[in-house]
Picture (cartoon, rainbow, N blue to C red):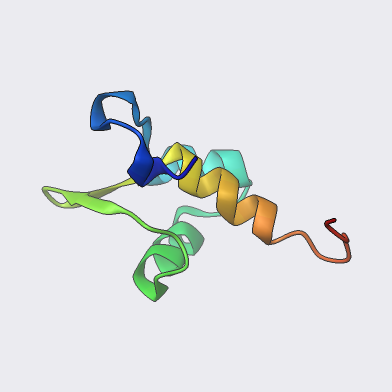
Length: 69
């Protein structure tokens, strides 16, 4: 189920720092992914929030050398 299919009160949003910790990359890498459109995010004031499901989908699609049936 895509995050857009869920009611907004059920969507878990992560900060850039939380996404960086989950992905084990720098915050700058997360900002680059957001600005390039590879990772969807919403802007709240001066900061970004990324749906947790979007992070999981990005990581799932980024596996290299893994055949999916």
